[in-house]
Amino acid sequence: MAVLVVLYRIFQQKILKNVTIYTVYLIRLYKFATANPKILTFCLYKPINILQKDPNAPGPQGLPKQHLPSEQQTVAFFLPNNLKNTNYNYSPMKHSLLAWLLPIAAGLPLELEAQTTELVADTVCVSVGTQNHMFIKAFSQPIKDYLEQHPRIAIEFTSADATVVEDGGAWFRGKTTGKAKVMLTIYQESTKFKDYPDYEKKLDELSFVVKVEDQVPATLPTMLTDWGLGRAEVAQAMTDKLYEDFNATFATMNPGMTEEELSYYDIYYTDDYEYPLVYNMFNEEGQLVSTYTLVNNATRLGYMAESEITQALEPQGYELLGYDEMGWPVLYNEATKTQAYGGVLTIQGQYFRMLGLEYCEENPLGITHGQLPMPTATITKQNGTLHIDAAGQAGQTVRIYGAGGKLLDSRTLHEGDNAISLDTHQPVIVKIGQTMGVKVM
Image (cartoon, rainbow, N blue to C red):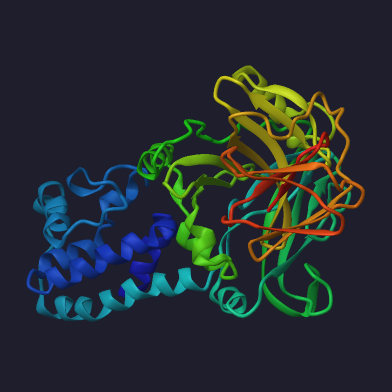
């Protein structure tokens, strides 16, 4: 019965998202309270008040929630406001029972968390006619185990009502106003086709509700353009926005990325369905040089036309210069030396759009209202080396810019393959002659 009481309290207070800190509180209280059974018994029969507050509120002694208090601080938090008002009568039998049950109850939520896949939202609102994805906030242990040995998972959406929500494999689209249940199924990737599911090997499935409305506006997340800021200052700004440090989780979700590749980024979870992640990128000196966000709804970024995002950036001093080879808008802010552009990021088996803001002393793309032609040369990057097959552009000058707008290399192309060794794992922009610049990841 006591175990049921504990579980009921946990679910009643809706604290599964706070399961880690909750468990640590319980374990510390158990250790301290073996000599003080009144406290132990009180904590079982009366929910911890801190968990009834806003999850971002300060903890005991005014500490932020990410700083776990000591045993003495924890007990000090309960005693003044709560314990002195209880009329609980201690008995050795109850103390003995609780001493056995509390470690079991404390360990149970951790097991639940480790085995559960969690979506950014259980109910989402989308606009009619827009293509959408679903960010996965946490992976279950079977998915983590699979990714330790494989590069990707595969995703498929299935709509319960195709008249309201159309499913298209790794995306779904609102067709008409209404509401429909959608199933997200996670599979192992096919050994024959990249990003395609192996339908015989399902890893997990979850359902969520999609509400389709005529128009659903969204607000861009905080994307810092104070170029040169240090990591600590950026982290404070993100924390002030209540964004969650997502670096460890992101590394677990993407074990194929090396420690060096991840070292340039600080990644934050926004708890926003439309823009779930913000990536802040730093140079070797630890200075902020660019920032990116996942864009769930492709229409917000636009294609060869003004869009919700361009209209949000223009009042901030950005000028729309044109569109790149993929049709994404390219903007530039002269005051902050910031270039804005779009792209595609493959993450969690889905093709999310991306908005990037980068420091550029001058506009390396050189676009003048989209009039520059695309280069004919073939450009690839492999193992730190840039390969450019001149393909008709031999004799022209190639300039390679880093993420911070710094010129990394400049040379004349010769016929055939031009191999250029790069001392960076960051994305670069390659501009050949009077053609449009190309971003190479």
